[in-house]
Image 1 (cartoon, rainbow, N blue to C red):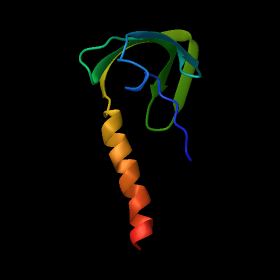
Image 2 (image 1 turned 60 degrees about the vertical axis):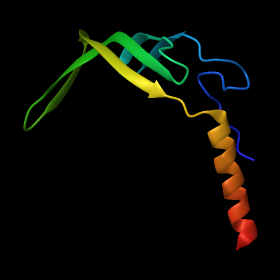
Image 3 (image 1 turned 135 degrees about the vertical axis):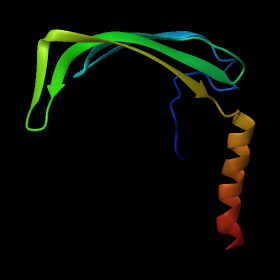
Image 4 (image 1 turned 45 degrees about the vertical axis):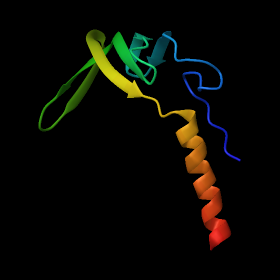
Length: 98
C-alpha cells in the first residue's frame, strides 16, 4: 500500500489550516505563507531572494553577489478524502473484474 504525506491535514485529521514555510535551495532562500481560503482551497504566497542571472545567445552567467528578489502567488485545490477513497476502491475493483 502506498502512503502519501500531505502538506495539509486530510479530512480525517481536520480542516485545512494556514501554514508558514521556510524554503532554501540552490535558487536562494524564501518565505511563504499558505492561508486557507475555503474548505478545499488555499493560496500560496511566496517571497524570497536568490542569485541573479544573465542570459544571452552565447553565454549564461549566474551571480550570487547580485541577488534577485521574487514574489509568487499560486492556488492549491485539495480533493476531498471521500473522492480519493472512491477512486482507490475503483482501482482495486478493476483487477478483480479482469
